[in-house]
Amino acid sequence: MKQSKRHQEIIDIVKTQGYVSTDDLVERFNVSPQTIRRDLNELAAENKIRRHHGGATIPSSSVNTSYNTRKVMQLVEKDRIAEAMAEHIPDGATLFIDIGTTPEAVARALLNHNDLRIVTNNLNVASVLTGKDDFRVILAGGEVRNRDGGIVGEATLDFISQFRLDFGIMGISGIDLDGSLLDFDYHEVRVKQAIIENSRCVMLGADHTKFGRNAMVNLGDISQIDMLFTDEHPPEALLKLITEHEIHMEVVGQDNTLD
Image (cartoon, rainbow, N blue to C red):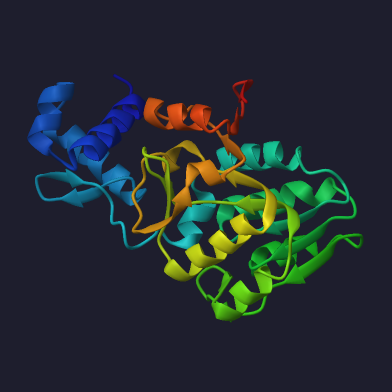
């Protein structure tokens, strides 16, 4: 079995069982203990599992991967997702752009557009977009997080709530298989909720690593999203919910669209 396929199966087992021992994986895949330990160390370094002596569990639901690490994770996939999302934004539109590495990729993908008006609580997004003379960028007030340039707090919520815009561009830390939208930071979640409530069309970009990923704060439900952009088909349980709620889904690079 190829390493990439074995890695994905290990992740699936951990998500299903909550814990798996090294011995069980050695027996299941018929490989050496050294190979399994190397697999687990690599997956733990990517925050896809949590390494324990003798096995692995699901990663922490209270602490997200560092911003600098997330910036380079699934970089190609995020750029493809961002390009697909940008194609649905017409010139002259108004939009929110959220905190996160995927929304930042969308900001870069929008630089060929014209006459956009953007409200954002992301310093990195504002920095990207202010290079366009015909863009109007409105930056939310609030507390700036040193780790990623995100702006959060009560002032941010009040500011976001003043607007009603065409599109809300969002990223997410995890999507549970029951359709729950999950994140790590309560304050950030409140801002995301305000963006959902004040956008006519909510667009979510999420690469396949977000499906089934655990995080401690429940933001809302997949039914609140109008459009989902990803790089691989979601697990069957989640795909069923997307179909039931008639969410427009695009799987980039596979010529698959679900309406």
